[in-house]
Amino acid sequence: MILLILINFLTRIGFIALLVMSTFQGYKLNVTNYDVNLSSHSGTATILQISDFHNRGYVFDNGSFFDVVDAYAFDYVFFTGDIVDERTKDFTQVEELFAHYADYECFYVTGNHEFAMNEDKRLAFFSLLNEYNIIRLGQNNYYPLSRLSSTYVIGVDDPYQYAGLDITREENDELYFTDLEQEINNLPSEAATILLAHRPEYFKEYANYGVDVIFSGHTHGGQINFPGRNDLINMVSSRPFYSGGIFYEQSSTMINSRGIGYSTLKIRFGSGTSAEVTLTKIRGV
Image (tube, rainbow, N blue to C red; front, side, top):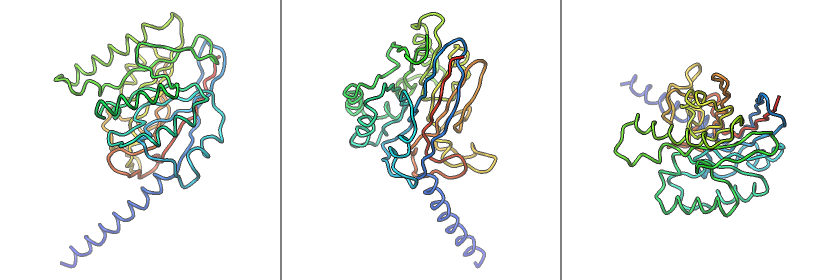
């Protein structure tokens, strides 16, 4: 009996400690800097990547979102999916985000939550993109980046768009890769390619297609990490698991953002799970 009471007490203490630590992690905003060289292309561009906002708001322990981020200089803004959440009731906070960066050239690609919303909300969200001149990629379109010679940005819509179909995971992936291949085939020859793709787990496939730089999100750094096992518990299914950072495969480089918001639970616990935006300086060499 005493042992059960002790176990119950320690469990409660542990749960309270988890909440305290997760709140601390969730309300600190990190700005992570990366450098990427782009062979045979001249110029320099700095990319602000905002991912997995999940309509969460702008209050952080180390300052407001805009105060923290706007202390840095950048040339383009990439939104890499899940800017809204399927439970989002209105787009007030998202509209504030878009309006704040309206003077920049902004590019967006869908995440799974955009397709998890009902169609009316999804279309209303897409209309906001148009209103603030944010370019939605993944529509058989590509755009040159003026600060980098012969360099184009493309995107691929999240594979969750096919979730309503009665197909296997393998068939879903095949549709996704068909979309990706079509986007790549549209590009001019000899172009350097920057891909916005919400899902990092397909990194090897992106590299096989010869994409130079990929910006992804989705995994939230795992949200719950333990020392030495940052994939022990993760709130987002992704295999292989990428917990945020910079990764290399063949001649490709992937920036995987830990994002800003939450998946399912408002918890970010453990090393490397703080909310994050990335700043990537791409240099032609």
